[in-house]
Length: 237
Image (cartoon, rainbow, N blue to C red):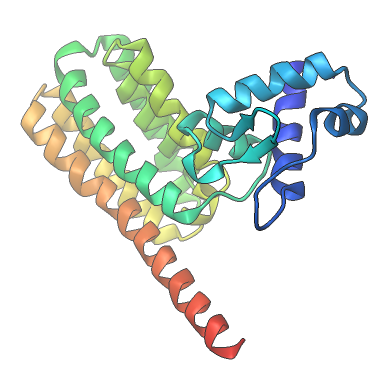
């Protein structure tokens, strides 16, 4: 099994098979037998997962799951593997994404090229067509935001922000299933685009801040609902 295929499957297996109390996972030998690969391959994969802060290998004790401390890269790996993400961690990531994208809007005002503007126009045309047809615009929303980050001409910045959207791949289609939310988002994208064209960094930042407030509020609402349901479950237990 190739490393890129082993990692998400191994992460999913470790989460599913770890002890609920101690968080200890199956041993290297057991993992190698389960996935029918060498212990060397398992060891290499575990080293990557440990760097992502998903697991901790303790000498003479075993392998332990540390999912709550997982890095952004690990959470992106969870998303690719179809694993459920901790809503609180997602909310915190959305909060961090907001900080980054507000700064990206400012930088794009001074660094964007005509190529970036044309890419944004094309995305907005596609978004407008989908809104008119009553279709969700999750793909166009992602492309619009990442094109603004691309316009900063900072490749590391772009890679970081891309991870946020990998993590939200499963939730964005649900978020944009509401046609009114799509219409509102498209209208706000148009305003942001106009600010970028005018190279008005202060306005672009303010508009991006207001725009991303919707996603932040959405996740706050979901977390509140989950807290209420958990409280009811505990009361009925």
